[in-house]
Length: 137
Length: 220
Image (cartoon, rainbow over all chains, first blue to last red; front, side, top):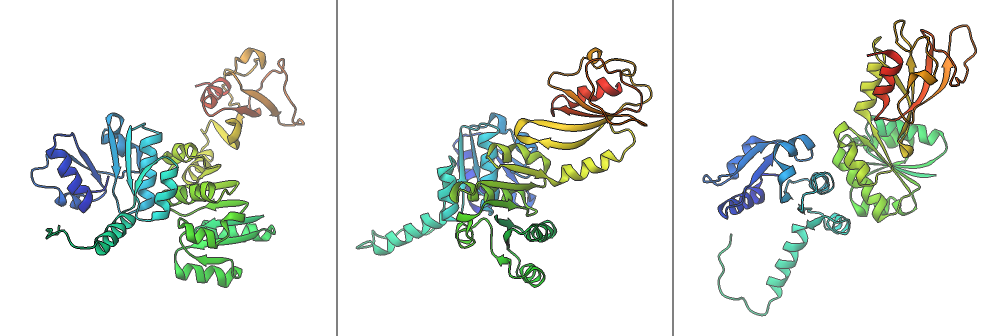
């Protein structure tokens, strides 16, 4: 759910590995971020809407990942996926570390890019010596 | 009681006003600066600018000592998340959420929000009840028990006319509590009461069986 840079990239990666991927976004224009060779399904729809999720095949899904810009939207969609459709694996991006903590403790697998990136930058900065050149993404 | 209201739109504003008149201590959290200023101007300093989904804002608002938490923004996901934060992070004993999309009622209930109010459903029902062909009117929902109190009027050609309550074969768990008949005092029916056309009946039913009750009393 959410075809931004991360969503589009992830959908492409999973597709290449042979998974059956459906990506949802409320704006058709977002699908430009999918790689041209993307073989999955791109569907316009709201991921917090049960009917849109059904259309996307959530009843048969093995995993659901919420990657929109809205923390609350992501959390709500993941709770619907987990508690109404019983999707076995549900991952959620929440920018807010405090919300990540709370909803993590309530059973949703949440990631805060804010925490992860800050941590990563700090470690990189404080490392004794740089480990050679690394290409920036 | 100390009550926190999230969302200072029309609903939040008039709710705050009503709750203050009842003598409650109150705080409105509103994201928009201009709206916050308007409410403070009108009701006194009871509105703080802030996001009711942010834990720090909620902590500053004193969510830890709130007796009740009411989320009435126009966004269901915001209402869902802020109520869960209030409930699980700050242990507010009673959380109430407005639901805009009726489809979301299930997830709100599953996530443990104590009271849900579907504004769209309420408006729809009020309008439907004004239709002359409307089978029954909802008077009260008793959410905890899964029961509802409804009013049904027996139309002139109903198959229920002339039958006793016993003969009606009401759906299980349904009770006819009161009959209001013209020119008479309202009375509590027993199993031998015979129904008449134009009887107004107050009944206890469930969301699952209200349709069957309507068919029994009004015909299909």
